[in-house]
Image (cartoon, rainbow, N blue to C red; front, side, top):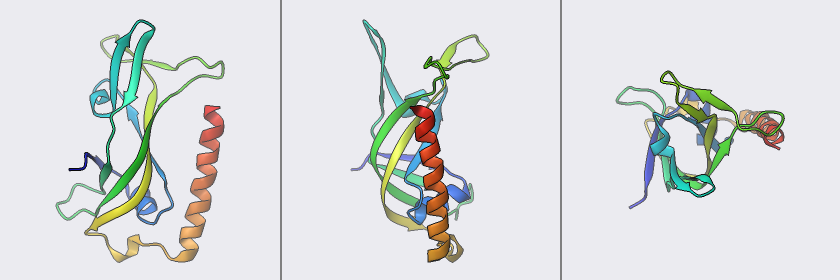
Length: 148
């Protein structure tokens, strides 16, 4: 059986994934949700962080019983720490004084393998699809530049 991660997702991202325009879904990692996204192992050099591997994401747009849903395959997952302009890890402090890295997990998406309750207006026409693909590609390029 496939290992599945269920996530809530906003409408614009849901539609972009449904129509094949968005190829990466990212989530911030906090102390409260870290076990869902990463495996942390103490080593002599520090902490080794690996992504929890999922075969698919089950994405739900809304909280209604009949909310649109889709299942998309995950090609790979990547742990992405955020750094400052000097290359130092960005650190956040939570209420109890515990520090944690500002980071995300990025899921590189494959094929949408099923949908449920998806309204017709969630599907893009070719012109909209081309425009959304262009906008998202520019955003991905900017993010890639910021990580280098």
